[in-house]
Amino acid sequence: MGGDDAALVRRHLAGDPDAFRLLYEKYGDKVFASAFRIVGEHHAAADLVQEVFVKIHGELRSFKFESKFSTWLFRVTVNHALNRASEGSRHARIHEKIVRDGRGDPGGTMEGRPIDDEVHRALQQLSPKLRTVISLRYLEGLSYEEIAEILEISIGTVKSRLFLAHETLRPILKDVMLEQGP
Amino acid sequence: MNCAEFSDRVFDFLQGTLHEEREEFVRHRSGCAACAGRLEGIRENEQILTGARAPSAPADLWPRIAAAIAQTRPIPFRLLRVASGLGAAAALLLAVTLFATGSAPRTPPLKLVVQEVAPESQRTFRSLVPKYEDVDAATAMVDTILRNDY
Image 1 (tube, rainbow over the protein chains, first blue to last red):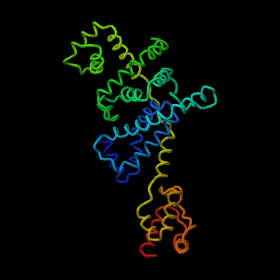
Image 2: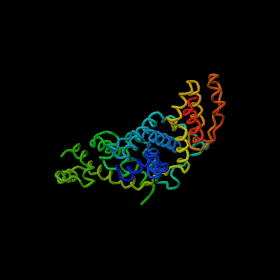
Image 3: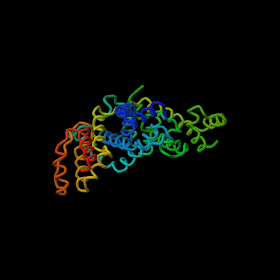
Image 4: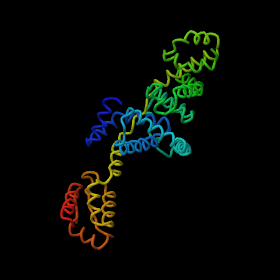
């Protein structure tokens, strides 16, 4: 566990009211970004991150300090997100239709750059499991070892999922590159 | 090295951690257009993916989380212990009331409402626990109750 995180967890357990907020400030955006990539929708990602932080707040007292806090946090996030993604594809389609019909708030996607929206749409073509490894590897910049620990799979499985994800993304992202120009 | 083995080692190659089999890997790439294309595709994908911006969490997310945590905060053990001394119905009432009003410190003000409890417990509450402004005041009062063995 990173020294700062361990110190913050211990401060929280000792009753420091600011410690948990500081953990959120450190990881909130990262956790939200991963959740957003996996569940594919802004509001659902926000709800999920809320659930995750409430859950870990309730469970920090039983945290064993055997793994890094960030690994545990991402594991909880990814498990929640994968469950949500599997049950939520119908909701996502409905939401997408509402937005397309102009009857709703798009939920704040990426604030501007078309390339980011294109990448997000490309990732939604992947299965939730493949989206997850791509998100953890390239969005969070985690190592293969860290991803394996978070997902509780072998490093070989991480690499094979990444390979499959790249194979699927290749033609889609090639089109994105052509549209964006040099 | 065949194509499957090439695929297995492609990320080690890209990461610079393929040492012993590197020469064999490069030789296969030179002789296999499909694998060379795959490797190039992964490189291009990685360039796009690592350059993509991540969305930020909404500004109101932390206040929502903090409010949700306050709602789920467990009832202090000391309060439950005291309440249990006042009888089951009273204990339940105290627990439910504390939970429903939120036991977060000071906001919103905690108020205990005495109703639907056994008559003896009602009398106890009505006489001794009429109203509290916050958790500290409630705790002090129930401590008093405990000390005096009501």
